[in-house]
Image 1 (cartoon, protein in one colour):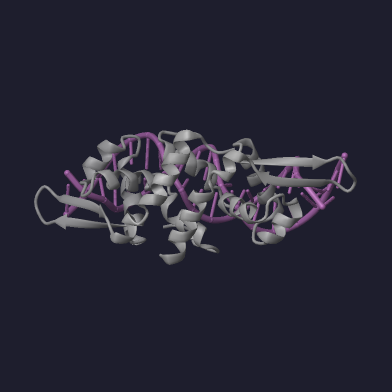
Image 2 (cartoon, rainbow over the protein chains, first blue to last red):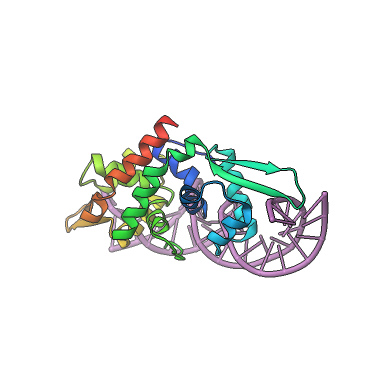
Amino acid sequence: MTKQTIQCPIERTLKQISGKWKSVIIFRLLEHPRCRFNELQKLIPECSRRMLALQLKELEHDGLISKTVYPVVPPKTEYSLTERGKKLKPVIEGLQEWGRIN
Amino acid sequence: MTKQTIQCPIERTLKQISGKWKSVIIFRLLEHPRCRFNELQKLIPECSRRMLALQLKELEHDGLISKTVYPVVPPKTEYSLTERGKKLKPVIEGLQEWGRIN
DNA sequence: CGGTATCCCGACCGATACTG
DNA sequence: CAGTATCGGTCGGGATACCG
Protein backbone atom coordinates (compact mmCIF):
# COMPACT_ATOMS: atom_id res chain seq x y z
CA MET A 1 0.00 0.00 0.00
CA THR A 2 0.95 3.59 -0.52
CA LYS A 3 2.86 5.20 2.33
CA GLN A 4 0.67 7.93 3.74
CA THR A 5 2.05 11.29 4.86
CA ILE A 6 -0.22 13.57 2.96
CA GLN A 7 0.07 17.33 3.34
CA CYS A 8 -1.48 19.07 0.36
CA PRO A 9 -3.93 18.13 -2.40
CA ILE A 10 -1.30 17.94 -5.09
CA GLU A 11 0.55 15.30 -3.12
CA ARG A 12 -2.67 13.41 -2.49
CA THR A 13 -3.12 13.15 -6.23
CA LEU A 14 0.47 12.18 -6.93
CA LYS A 15 0.38 9.48 -4.27
CA GLN A 16 -2.53 7.91 -6.07
CA ILE A 17 -1.20 8.05 -9.61
CA SER A 18 2.57 7.91 -9.29
CA GLY A 19 3.09 4.26 -8.50
CA LYS A 20 5.43 2.71 -11.03
CA TRP A 21 2.68 1.76 -13.49
CA LYS A 22 -0.43 3.49 -12.25
CA SER A 23 -0.43 6.41 -14.61
CA VAL A 24 0.06 4.15 -17.60
CA ILE A 25 -2.70 1.83 -16.45
CA ILE A 26 -5.08 4.76 -16.12
CA PHE A 27 -3.97 6.05 -19.49
CA ARG A 28 -4.63 2.70 -21.12
CA LEU A 29 -8.00 2.36 -19.43
CA LEU A 30 -8.98 5.76 -20.78
CA GLU A 31 -8.52 4.51 -24.34
CA HIS A 32 -9.50 0.89 -23.66
CA PRO A 33 -12.39 0.80 -21.20
CA ARG A 34 -13.12 -2.59 -19.61
CA CYS A 35 -9.84 -4.39 -19.92
CA ARG A 36 -9.06 -7.89 -18.81
CA PHE A 37 -5.93 -8.60 -16.83
CA ASN A 38 -4.13 -10.12 -19.77
CA GLU A 39 -5.18 -7.35 -22.08
CA LEU A 40 -3.57 -4.85 -19.74
CA GLN A 41 -0.49 -7.01 -19.67
CA LYS A 42 -0.26 -6.88 -23.42
CA LEU A 43 -0.85 -3.13 -23.44
CA ILE A 44 1.94 -2.67 -20.88
CA PRO A 45 4.39 -5.48 -21.63
CA GLU A 46 7.23 -4.08 -19.49
CA CYS A 47 5.08 -4.39 -16.39
CA SER A 48 5.37 -7.77 -14.69
CA ARG A 49 2.29 -9.74 -13.72
CA ARG A 50 3.15 -9.23 -10.08
CA MET A 51 3.46 -5.47 -10.40
CA LEU A 52 0.36 -5.22 -12.53
CA ALA A 53 -1.64 -7.01 -9.86
CA LEU A 54 -0.18 -4.83 -7.11
CA GLN A 55 -0.80 -1.57 -8.91
CA LEU A 56 -4.33 -2.57 -9.88
CA LYS A 57 -5.03 -3.44 -6.26
CA GLU A 58 -3.86 -0.05 -5.06
CA LEU A 59 -5.78 1.77 -7.76
CA GLU A 60 -8.88 -0.14 -6.78
CA HIS A 61 -8.29 0.57 -3.10
CA ASP A 62 -7.99 4.26 -3.90
CA GLY A 63 -11.26 4.14 -5.82
CA LEU A 64 -9.78 4.99 -9.21
CA ILE A 65 -10.70 1.75 -10.91
CA SER A 66 -13.22 -0.99 -10.29
CA LYS A 67 -12.92 -4.69 -10.88
CA THR A 68 -15.55 -7.07 -12.13
CA VAL A 69 -15.02 -10.76 -11.53
CA TYR A 70 -17.00 -13.21 -13.62
CA PRO A 71 -17.42 -16.52 -11.80
CA VAL A 72 -16.42 -18.66 -14.74
CA VAL A 73 -13.69 -21.16 -15.52
CA PRO A 74 -11.16 -20.14 -16.61
CA PRO A 75 -11.43 -16.96 -14.54
CA LYS A 76 -12.32 -13.71 -16.20
CA THR A 77 -11.94 -10.25 -14.74
CA GLU A 78 -12.44 -6.80 -16.12
CA TYR A 79 -11.02 -3.53 -14.95
CA SER A 80 -12.47 -0.12 -15.68
CA LEU A 81 -12.16 3.42 -14.42
CA THR A 82 -14.59 4.69 -11.82
CA GLU A 83 -16.20 8.11 -12.21
CA ARG A 84 -13.55 9.41 -9.86
CA GLY A 85 -10.88 7.86 -12.03
CA LYS A 86 -12.34 9.27 -15.21
CA LYS A 87 -12.07 12.75 -13.76
CA LEU A 88 -8.32 12.32 -14.00
CA LYS A 89 -8.52 12.45 -17.77
CA PRO A 90 -7.52 16.11 -18.20
CA VAL A 91 -4.77 15.70 -15.61
CA ILE A 92 -3.32 12.61 -17.29
CA GLU A 93 -3.56 14.30 -20.65
CA GLY A 94 -1.78 17.33 -19.24
CA LEU A 95 1.05 15.14 -18.01
CA GLN A 96 1.16 13.39 -21.36
CA GLU A 97 1.21 16.61 -23.32
CA TRP A 98 3.92 18.25 -21.25
CA GLY A 99 6.09 15.17 -21.52
CA ARG A 100 5.55 15.01 -25.23
CA ILE A 101 6.73 18.50 -26.04
CA ASN A 102 9.40 18.75 -23.36
CA MET B 1 19.43 11.03 -9.55
CA THR B 2 16.20 9.68 -10.85
CA LYS B 3 16.27 6.13 -12.14
CA GLN B 4 15.62 6.28 -15.86
CA THR B 5 13.50 3.73 -17.69
CA ILE B 6 11.23 6.02 -19.60
CA GLN B 7 8.69 4.64 -22.02
CA CYS B 8 5.97 7.20 -22.61
CA PRO B 9 5.61 10.96 -22.22
CA ILE B 10 3.37 10.76 -19.20
CA GLU B 11 6.05 8.81 -17.35
CA ARG B 12 8.70 11.28 -18.43
CA THR B 13 6.70 14.01 -16.77
CA LEU B 14 6.00 12.04 -13.62
CA LYS B 15 9.66 11.10 -13.26
CA GLN B 16 10.51 14.76 -13.19
CA ILE B 17 7.86 15.96 -10.76
CA SER B 18 7.13 13.03 -8.50
CA GLY B 19 10.17 13.05 -6.27
CA LYS B 20 9.20 13.28 -2.64
CA TRP B 21 9.08 17.11 -2.57
CA LYS B 22 9.40 18.20 -6.17
CA SER B 23 5.79 18.95 -6.87
CA VAL B 24 5.50 21.02 -3.73
CA ILE B 25 8.68 22.91 -4.54
CA ILE B 26 7.35 23.73 -8.00
CA PHE B 27 4.02 24.71 -6.52
CA ARG B 28 5.69 27.06 -4.07
CA LEU B 29 7.89 28.56 -6.75
CA LEU B 30 4.80 29.27 -8.83
CA GLU B 31 3.41 31.49 -6.09
CA HIS B 32 6.78 32.69 -4.75
CA PRO B 33 9.15 33.29 -7.66
CA ARG B 34 12.84 33.71 -6.78
CA CYS B 35 13.10 31.94 -3.46
CA ARG B 36 16.18 31.57 -1.35
CA PHE B 37 17.08 28.20 0.11
CA ASN B 38 15.91 29.12 3.57
CA GLU B 39 12.72 30.65 2.29
CA LEU B 40 11.84 27.36 0.62
CA GLN B 41 12.65 25.59 3.85
CA LYS B 42 10.19 27.77 5.69
CA LEU B 43 7.57 27.25 3.00
CA ILE B 44 8.04 23.47 3.23
CA PRO B 45 8.99 22.86 6.86
CA GLU B 46 8.49 19.07 6.74
CA CYS B 47 11.21 18.77 4.11
CA SER B 48 14.68 18.36 5.60
CA ARG B 49 17.59 20.50 4.45
CA ARG B 50 19.19 17.43 2.95
CA MET B 51 16.11 16.47 0.95
CA LEU B 52 15.47 20.02 -0.14
CA ALA B 53 19.00 20.25 -1.52
CA LEU B 54 18.67 16.88 -3.28
CA GLN B 55 15.33 17.66 -4.85
CA LEU B 56 16.43 21.11 -5.96
CA LYS B 57 19.49 19.59 -7.57
CA GLU B 58 17.40 17.12 -9.53
CA LEU B 59 14.90 19.76 -10.57
CA GLU B 60 17.78 21.92 -11.76
CA HIS B 61 19.34 18.98 -13.58
CA ASP B 62 16.03 18.35 -15.33
CA GLY B 63 15.82 21.98 -16.35
CA LEU B 64 12.71 22.79 -14.36
CA ILE B 65 14.31 25.36 -12.09
CA SER B 66 17.39 27.51 -12.26
CA LYS B 67 19.69 28.63 -9.50
CA THR B 68 21.39 31.96 -9.09
CA VAL B 69 24.36 32.12 -6.75
CA TYR B 70 25.42 35.53 -5.49
CA PRO B 71 29.12 35.56 -4.60
CA VAL B 72 28.64 37.21 -1.23
CA VAL B 73 29.31 36.31 2.39
CA PRO B 74 27.20 34.87 3.85
CA PRO B 75 26.18 32.97 0.73
CA LYS B 76 22.97 33.85 -1.04
CA THR B 77 21.19 31.76 -3.65
CA GLU B 78 17.92 32.11 -5.43
CA TYR B 79 15.83 29.49 -7.12
CA SER B 80 13.24 30.12 -9.78
CA LEU B 81 11.31 28.22 -12.38
CA THR B 82 12.64 28.05 -15.90
CA GLU B 83 10.31 28.64 -18.85
CA ARG B 84 10.06 24.90 -19.16
CA GLY B 85 9.15 24.67 -15.49
CA LYS B 86 6.55 27.39 -15.75
CA LYS B 87 4.80 25.43 -18.45
CA LEU B 88 3.94 22.90 -15.75
CA LYS B 89 1.59 25.39 -14.14
CA PRO B 90 -1.65 24.02 -15.61
CA VAL B 91 -0.51 20.46 -14.90
CA ILE B 92 0.34 21.21 -11.28
CA GLU B 93 -2.92 23.09 -10.87
CA GLY B 94 -4.77 20.14 -12.35
CA LEU B 95 -3.18 17.82 -9.83
CA GLN B 96 -3.97 20.26 -7.06
CA GLU B 97 -7.57 20.67 -8.11
CA TRP B 98 -8.26 16.96 -8.47
CA GLY B 99 -6.72 16.29 -5.06
CA ARG B 100 -8.75 19.07 -3.51
CA ILE B 101 -12.15 17.82 -4.60
CA ASN B 102 -11.41 14.08 -4.40
C1' DC C 1 -6.65 -17.13 -16.74
C1' DG C 2 -5.61 -14.35 -13.10
C1' DG C 3 -3.48 -14.10 -9.75
C1' DT C 4 -0.02 -15.19 -4.75
C1' DA C 5 4.16 -16.27 -2.06
C1' DT C 6 8.84 -15.74 -1.16
C1' DC C 7 13.40 -14.06 -1.54
C1' DC C 8 16.33 -10.34 -2.05
C1' DC C 9 18.79 -6.17 -3.59
C1' DG C 10 19.29 -1.43 -4.32
C1' DA C 11 17.10 3.11 -4.17
C1' DC C 12 15.00 6.35 -1.12
C1' DC C 13 15.07 8.97 2.72
C1' DG C 14 15.56 10.35 7.88
C1' DA C 15 18.95 11.67 11.54
C1' DT C 16 23.04 13.61 12.64
C1' DA C 17 27.34 15.88 12.13
C1' DC C 18 30.46 18.70 9.54
C1' DT C 19 31.95 22.83 6.15
C1' DG C 20 33.20 27.07 3.10
C1' DC D 1 23.51 30.94 4.86
C1' DA D 2 23.54 27.14 2.05
C1' DG D 3 24.78 23.41 1.69
C1' DT D 4 27.69 18.21 1.91
C1' DA D 5 29.07 13.59 4.20
C1' DT D 6 28.03 9.48 6.33
C1' DC D 7 25.30 5.90 8.40
C1' DG D 8 21.57 3.03 8.62
C1' DG D 9 16.61 1.54 8.20
C1' DT D 10 12.64 0.89 5.17
C1' DC D 11 10.45 -0.49 1.27
C1' DG D 12 9.58 -0.59 -3.80
C1' DG D 13 10.01 -3.66 -7.09
C1' DG D 14 12.56 -7.58 -9.93
C1' DA D 15 13.01 -12.79 -10.43
C1' DT D 16 11.11 -16.92 -9.77
C1' DA D 17 7.97 -20.43 -8.42
C1' DC D 18 3.44 -21.89 -7.13
C1' DC D 19 -2.03 -22.00 -7.00
C1' DG D 20 -7.51 -22.26 -7.60
